[in-house]
Amino acid sequence: MRDFRPDILGIAEVKPKNSANKPNIAEYNLNEVSNFNMFSKNVENDTGRGILLYVNAELEANEIKMDTPFEENLFVNININIHDKMLVGIIYRSESGSDENNSLLNVLITEACEKGYRKLLIMGDFNYPNIDWDTWFSKSEVEYNFISTLQDNYLYQAVHKPTRWRGNNRPNILDLLISNEEYSVTDLEYSSPLGKSDHCVISFSFECHVKILVKEKLRKCYQKADFDTTCIKTNLRNVKWEELLKDGNMDDVWDTFLSKMNEQIDKYVPTKKIKSGTNAKQNVPLDKEILSVLKKKKSLARKCSTSYTTDQSVRREYCKVRNKVKSLVRKAKRDFEHNISLKAKENPKVIWRYINSKSKTRVGIGELCKDPTNPKSEKTNDDREKANILARYFTSVFTKEPQGDIPTLPDRPRIFPMSALVVEKDDDIKMLGKLRQDKSPGLDCLHPMFLKELSEEIAIPLQIIFNKSLQEKEVPSDWRKAKVSAIFTKGEKSLAGNYRPVSLTSFVRDHIVDYMSLNQLFTKKQYGFMSGRSTALQLLSVLEKWTNALDEGNPVDCIYMDFQKAFDTVPHRRLISKLKSYGIDENLITWISSFLSNR
Image (cartoon, rainbow, N blue to C red):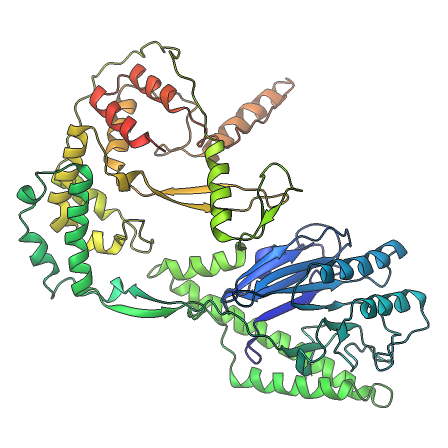
């Protein structure tokens, strides 16, 4: 990665053959060293050996599903310019595969060619050791049929040097680079294998005019803003908020507040230019000793590929140096992680970013079926169409309540009536003081660090805005908006939504929770979203009941249920009816109804 800085990286046989511990897919993530989107096949399941394809995030790429049921293949569409697309595939064929699977490989290659891409690149470990690629001939029927498939589809194969050697075995060409243009693959280099692999690493250039998604954008550096010596605080203190915010509807009032805040941001918060794909990565540093041993490993690897029959001492020396590289890199990684852990308290975002890079992976949304219930329906790769498909799907899961009367719930007994909610200045300061500065801003673009640093200066305008909102029982339109992300869960890239609403409504939530707790309106079975309780406590509680039952000789039968999209399907009218039965203030209920409208 450091030497070649590739745009596309393919790896076949990623899963260890004899390992009891199956790696998590996120362990293959390269985000800690470079900005790549990762695509995978057969990595997390027990099928096959696993293949990975990494594509530079500056390239617009998405996975393409092939119809041919060949065991291990992965194809990605890359938009190379406005009019043209490129199909990149990686394949692993097991040498012990069935005749049917060998035939399916030929069908798969034909299918890839028939998709009509102007540029086609297929790479991988094909395990055809007896093909003479200078003459395109083999005595094996399976290999001959493969050659015929390439010729019938007017394809070219660029690798002509051995790519795999082991002990006294004759080196073979097992790893291939197949393209639909004769001179599109250039600058081939054969480098030392990864780890203990006996396949060399092939690097090459692929000739095409590609569209790079390098977008230069401006980013505010709130960490470098001087809140003490600049005029930010003085300017905000001098604003006559009562007069400025007294007229207009809630949208007007909120927009006026945002306008004043953005004036200060534009004047006093420094800006820097950011290019996509150039983010600083947390690279494990390699010292001079490691770089020197790596250089020696590469030199010995080149000798191994030519002296396998005459000098086994070269092979032994290579294995010795290879193991030393592995040991040194592991030590460097341990030291690097130790240094990150030392910074955990002063900057927790650093360690969590590293942990997430090892435990989570993100893959872009590929082609989507226009009919979300029919996997065989027409597909689209247009971003706008995909966004509309997702929006329609997310909307469809909401509960559509019929008009007319709904069941009336009996009033719950309560001791203390609910007082009207009035937001005080100290409430604002307390809420803003709890904001985490390492979080990203919402749709309003007000960074948590900016709000927290100016908590005393903006407490009064926020007090005015919230009280006006509660009195008029209306909320600004911005508070009802949210960023929506489509997160892949499982199966055939099924759609799932992860909503992140942007609103400062914790006053209302805390007021209702305090009232409910004071009147003991929460059931004892409520564990989520309550201070001092959690799902872990819920599990411990039920386990205690089960073990007690077993100790007493009673049978235990458990039924597990999961409400699909529980939060998305809450019926709003019934929710309001339930709040009324709890004695929630009528004005507050109207405010909540306004918040929920058109959501």
